[in-house]
Length: 427
Image (tube, rainbow, N blue to C red; front, side):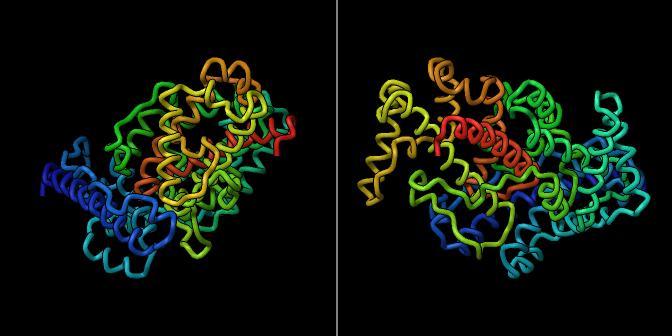
């Protein structure tokens, strides 16, 4: 067999895997809705539009053997990781998912091969954590004592991950990814203010520049295209190139995961948005639902209380564009007609409306500047949340890339809100 034959076989395998992965995300959506008869699942669309089938061929692979070439290209590595996460979500939902895997052998095979790349670290490799940190932090202004503390923190994170996380083909990259996650967690927890310039620039280096981000809804519903979009915006791929179990452990150990999943703001969550229950499997999809809805209920309460304190209970009449206010009122009227209890008007806002309210010139100068300090940065923070909310609402596969943005930015926004609330005594 020639090198060209091998390259053609690899390309065909990847195309078929992406094709099958598109089917898996759609069939999985229907399966999840059918299996979870909960208010949250009833609230989402019962049938999602099918993902656009990906049939474009992948080129640029130059290896003489399919086995070694399978994970050399960044495109194949990304598809393989998403396949592993899709299968992990399926197995997290039901043992019956094993039967579905038979229908998608290419995806199942690709997922297994990706998982087999990883192993637990040797003791000598953990010693490299400090060396990697020294390379990353050596040019900083940290004192020797602070530098050692940070190195110790990174090693502690590495040692707390029990699932295989070292890529046997690129040990250094795995360690650098943990160092990056650890640094993100540290800056989110310990920065003087979560939207100060140094924090903004650091997160922009790691998560990308989102000041002018935009993407089509159809692209965002596809986990592969969404992941490509994230990398295109500047996401450091080393942060998420781990099997799903290892990533979940890392995101907890680094302190990036916010403690809001079960913490809803009473009175600011409509019945159709109720998320249950502790019996639901802890997949990325379920956790994303709980996190985004808890966050929305809390930011609704914060905006309503701080604006009511400044302008009175009818603040929306003068501080929200007329068309937007009418849209909220129409949604409220329909909800009341369907038998829902009445909620504050802001509960009928769309997710994109929060940014609109906050960055509106008069609202910003008179209210929200004191909370978030940097208008461009807080707008960017919301933009990093938009892409993952769309697949969350459509019950699509949620992957590690989505969870990193979701956790980092909800933690960041909530920290600013909570700090201001303590000062203003808003409970």
